[in-house]
Image (cartoon, rainbow over the protein chains, first blue to last red):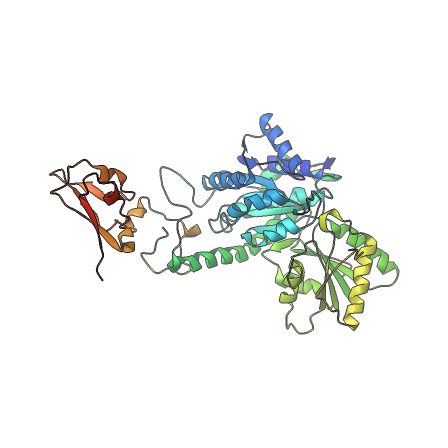
Length: 392
Length: 97
């Protein structure tokens, strides 16, 4: 039977990895991911799970090790943040096309310079195109559930792709929340053993990761992209079966009080809970506002998002990342593309907020909604605005 | 190298672009890359085998009479054999055409 406990979210996520009966964990510690791998190294050392914990020399080594162990047919997990994720970057692009179902928890954190250990989404957005399935958790329960879902989906033979679960650094990773931890029997019911389609086996040697000369490179890249797009079906199925077994239903996007909303805030990750409080406050004042939260970021759930946007007139899209010199933030750009020339599409306004641990408060969300309304009447000079930044 | 024996599309390319048979690198005729070739002068050759040791593509083999021959299907024409030969028995000549 599952049990409801007060637990730090990092530890809950690590417990999900343990319950998934992981075979190999290769990780290098970095704030704010540390507690996840610390806890995993402890449960491995204590014999609570029969796994290899590889204390690698760097994140580059961590992801390389993960590629090797996954190719050998081992259920593989790692976790990183920020500069560590960037040090992995070279290898992050490799398991996707090679169809290696590694699962990773990314504990989102700002990037240097200046040095910041605090939360935003600049690290993961810089690695947006690594070709992994990417989900974003809002709270501790979701961090636990999405981690189990990630193993289930990634390793499904129809998918066989790496998958990452994003949780916000500190604001989610380090808070203690009430989380319903599933029992081993329950997890075993949901997550079958890993049976890869191909693996490195000296009795039946194959080559993984060969050179792709110009005659085959395009075909290999398209094959990977099509597999990523097609994973959508299995992602949804994985969530449906999770709901059938445990009663918690997850969707690619979630809405909150959006039915008759004129303005919809669009968020990802843990700030969505603050956004919901802001919406309640604004609703009390008679404002027709709601929320769309993106849980599945890659492959992007276009049809679900369009449906969720409904008949809203305006979207106030919140990005936790400032891409220097770009037209908009990454989420803003994505949604503007999605709605380009769609009849009756909402007007899209892009706000960049919460960089490097700056709190995004209820008042800030109200400010974004007010600005979206003002911008709808009078077009702003810029295509995005950085919220709460001082000029002098 | 990914298999290019047949023309493949993204739907027919192997899973993960894996090469499903072992030892397939021998199929990759690296000799195509060559713009120059080594020629061995057996009058000067002392059968020391240094060229055979140094060849990075294992494209040199010893014949029954103890001399060495170049497998031009794999020789890339790098010239290491000529450089290492203690008797200057190997000369590099340009490929014609």
